[in-house]
Length: 228
Image (cartoon, rainbow, N blue to C red; front, side, top):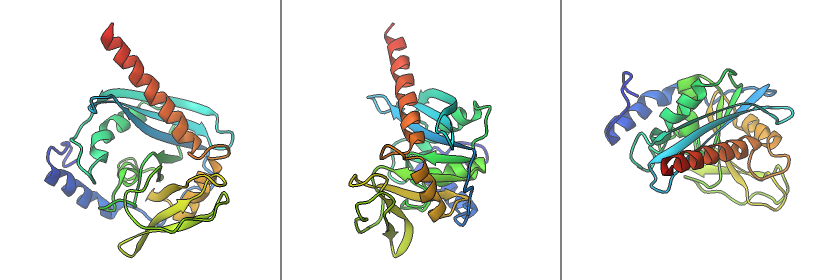
């Protein structure tokens, strides 16, 4: 955003990233015992334009759902590599604004520092909301790495341009890893520890799994309503 106006061009979007990037806190250390954690995810319709953005807040200890919110809308920006967050941010911020609970930590289905412009979705959301945020990607966006050992909890550095931008973290024995990076107000070691807390049974954090399910159901319902 530039002076409250959503960017309409690539140059405007890149200017927003350049303006906000220095505000990112990459040190943290962030909450080590958050009471609540929120998963954020977006599902797209086949046309790639309509979307549903979901936020699912979990009790960090029991992983039970505390509150959910969802917004159905349209992508706010064209698909441009490195600027993907601009497609989703308005809907995600709207969903966050519908919550009665303020989560202690945001878990984004995407990346933070591990981004070609060092300002992925987790960084952007963290700066705009002021909340601690991390990115947990299913696949890498940038960087090179060595495969971590096969046991749960093993990791290797994700390196891009000679800089460590995240960790490749094994959340299940013998299962392909996830890609963790800091978004805002979190340290990398703490971010990985929190991801392990959220993956007692599955590869992906329970926050991501719950938010993914919620936004897909909401999108299906919206599409079904259009056919009525």
